[in-house]
Image 1 (spheres, rainbow, N blue to C red):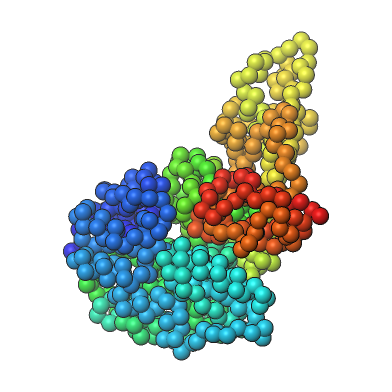
Image 2 (cartoon, rainbow, N blue to C red):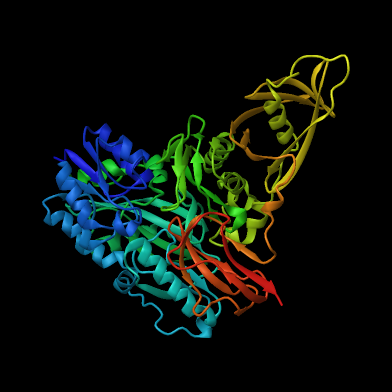
Length: 612
């Protein structure tokens, strides 16, 4: 019997595995980088072992250090989570050779399927060896790992070599393996997958389908189970998935992924690990996949057939990122994160935790289960709308709008959903009374608040930045209290403002952290009365859109070089993703301040391009 489990991972998945272990009476061991010294997963584990360094290549990708940590902490089993070394056959072998239990598939199965090139050959599919104009568009993919990293859509032959270089660098940094391959890119398809679970006694379960079509940068955003509208194709997907598992004598939890288009299923890959979206399957089948992984690793036999599926489940990934700003990841302090009861929240953060630059920007996963798909969508969108999320910019509004979009509610979505609808989904819809509520809450307790004067006071003015736009509001102290044009102030204190507008009372909950203010679900930044002239930048300045590391600069680029608008100049790596910085105009590069390996903060001046 397993008595102590080390999770070779971090964040949300480590906390999730620990939860199941605690419920089963199993001791837990965490590993953590220096950047994660005070992270939630390191705090909630029974024991934690330091991996010196911050970069994944120094820490969570060092299998030798993780095995050593398991032995030193007295663990007798290792769970890999997802990402990092979860699909690394050499790591699985090292765990087994150290006398530890590996809570995952046999190394041989990982080897056969974790490389997408080998998996496709096993299923009779060959990657493209020579790409011509007739093959376009194509998809460049990392052979190891997943999560959208190392993936690029190429629509022009001239873009192929640069995108291959970028994909190799990104894959190497994320998975320790820079192998990439090229395959045809199917437009307008749905991303559908099948959860499988197999034991050592020859039983393989196909635990339903999931639709994961809503993606950004080829990384999933919203997932659901079962995948709607598949009809007779469902059984075909089951059969292909079980066939893939049996072909490699698979054991444990895994996922077989397909692209469904025009009524046909195209095999993509088999992920030899637990998936981020596994909670929707757990909700529909009423099971704990991590508990079943542990039981299978102990040699237990599965029942001949899986349990019966019930209802529908939807999961949304909450990211610290700006969808309207090229999905740029965000950093800062997560002051508060709560969702209403009735929705499952899996997270690796708690109130007050910092969001750093080193790892994936996912803050949490919110999951709703209901008897029908429509009810599940309504429950999840309503919960996210009412959630309290105080901290960096997130994709919360995008998630709510996506879950309510007519194309999604009618189950007519595909993987191009955000390419078509992102502009509409991210168009600000500011509430004009939010800045006023922020100003009234700020005024609470100041001299003259709540009192009366024989003479009317001068109007008070406050300025806020909301959804990228500056808003100026005015209010006045009178004998009747605070007033604002056209609005009756029913109540105002530092945490709650109640306004009556057109006879309707509206409640605004307010929280403040330095200059950042949150009113209900809206974030604002308090601005000084007079703008700082020193904040102006020269035209053509390229500023870092997020904190990160300069990974490379275009070959031969130097001050004085002629550049074209849209030409890539340098690349930043932040939160395990590469971000291209391009010339804003055609002209001359008058200054270059960035160099490979340099760490930069958000807003740092990287280069200046002068128009000629």
